[in-house]
Image (tube, rainbow, N blue to C red; front, top):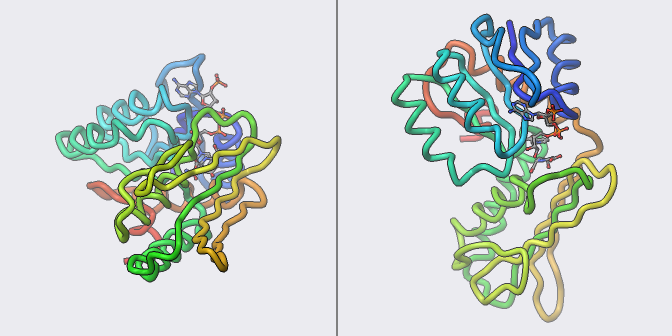
Length: 233
Ligand SMILES: NC(=O)C1=CN([C@@H]2O[C@H](COP(=O)(O)OP(=O)(O)OC[C@H]3O[C@@H](n4cnc5c(N)ncnc54)[C@H](OP(=O)(O)O)[C@@H]3O)[C@@H](O)[C@H]2O)C=CC1
Ligand SMILES: O=C(O)C1=N[C@H](C(=O)O)C[C@H](O)C1
């Protein structure tokens, strides 16, 4: 398969390594410095760029009729716009705040726990995410997905990075050198605490998941998520 990499930083390079190992070819390495030359030859594009570049990258793929998998975080207020555009162009689009199998299972566990806790008012929920110091967005896309999972099942209405009111989920976003990504969800009462936690040891799991998603989306049309790729229902 011919792959266009939109973003060739820490993730782009890790994805390249895994894509080559799986027999794919890289036809474009897009950064801030170059243009989309080569995108026309791709079977699929993988966008891991920066928040301000994601929508241009994704919409350009729709214009070229190339299926696109995006893992870039920090641009989600424009997600609905991209969905409309994808449908207008009869394209294929898959966004994932986190492509690792482990985190996608963690999303399911989080949703299940939130459902269990929905009517148990003794517990307050909060979250922590820890990432490397180069990360541009806070909270992480993964933390937002986890918060959305809790909001869907409980009386919590939104998340905040500081001073939560009663119906807000507090997310503590920490930046520590070289941490690939750690997410925890806490339910605390006066007498105890339940914690669920996912720790990434490297970027390998994110990158493998993105390549598997790219292999999966080739030849498809529509809007997808990692739930579809991993058959999580
Ligand atoms: N969904 C997931 O599983 C994961 C998502 N991420 C997300 O992926 C994104 C990238 O992360 P990471 O690789 O660590 O970041 P890096 O900062 O290491 O890389 C970003 C890359 O984007 C490039 N870039 C800048 N402008 C453009 C543009 N206009 N078009 C295309 N590329 C551009 C940069 O180019 P230049 O070098 O020229 O500046 C650089 O190559 C982030 O949003 C991060 O949150 C990260 C890990 C996992
Ligand atoms: O920027 C990162 O590095 C990561 N970003 C994603 C996010 O914002 O959730 C996924 C992962 O945690 C690493």
